[in-house]
Image (cartoon, rainbow, N blue to C red; front, side, top):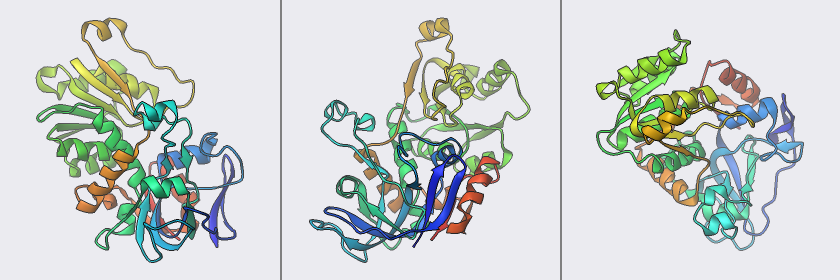
Amino acid sequence: MRAAIFRGPGELAIEDVEPGTPGPGEVAVEVRAAATCGTDLKSYRRGHPKLFPTLPARFGHEFAGVVTEVGDGVTTFAPGMRVVAANTAPCDVCWACVRGRQSLCENLIFLNGAFAEQVVIPAAIVQRNTYEIPDSLDFGAAAPLEPLATVVHGMAETGIELGDTVVVHGAGPIGLMFVKLSVLRGANVVSVDRSAWRLEQAGQAGAVETIDISGLADAAEIAARIKKSTPGGRGADVSIEAVGLPAVWEQAVQTLRPGGTAVLFGGTPKGAPFSVDSSDMHYSEYTLKGVFHHTPRYVRTAVDLLISGRVDGHSLVTETRPLDQLVPSLEDMAAGRGTKYILTP
């Protein structure tokens, strides 16, 4: 079968490999739709020691498809079922899991290999984070389950209340999901980005105002412009960073009202510090929260959102392409020509 094989930064190609056979507790799935994401792009460009500790490796982790074979002991799934799965599962026994912090699990079990004609889901993910989906949910709409689950986690940390003003910094797929879920929570959302095209999508997702900061270079000027669009010019009740750049982390904090909360969501490069005015932090009583990954609880909620249609996975997708367009799709993401692509093996 055809599958994407990652051999190192910049070395990613579709190759012929042997299909996998599910072992005890595992499930083999014919992939009908696989979605690109920002983590794929980062990994393709610079590697990812946690996701790919050994190379070469199979590539991709957002997908939906049809069960073709199940391993010994699997009773919940059967051939022919339409399914979607998250990309990891916690161990449930380490200190973090025992304390209810499963996103920080020391022994996360990973799934890689979604950009292929077939993928085998590890037993732990079958048990905790794999779900049957109805015929009414298209495979392409279901595939972005994993990033939606992480955003559901982020939303749980925001404390957003009805009528709050929420500023979402970044209007890529993650930012758009934050816009949509914040609107569902009853917030007035302001979306900030440097792309008019992405901001148009944010408006369609429910943002009451969009701010194009492409012509602004000075951080103070950017913060002042954003605060101008908040009640009394005081700043956001909740400020969400969805880009993954230290400068935007700082921007998110600088646009808070006194007593506000910043959710610092986007993953930054390792060893990338950011600055906070300690006086503002103290006298304005800011709350800063870092958010990483998801848990089975948030995956379940994300599945429900997709099945109900309250979140339309297709609204996050720029285009559907054949599998051999994986590398060009990642390059288009890097160049800002698209946000998320569905690959159909």
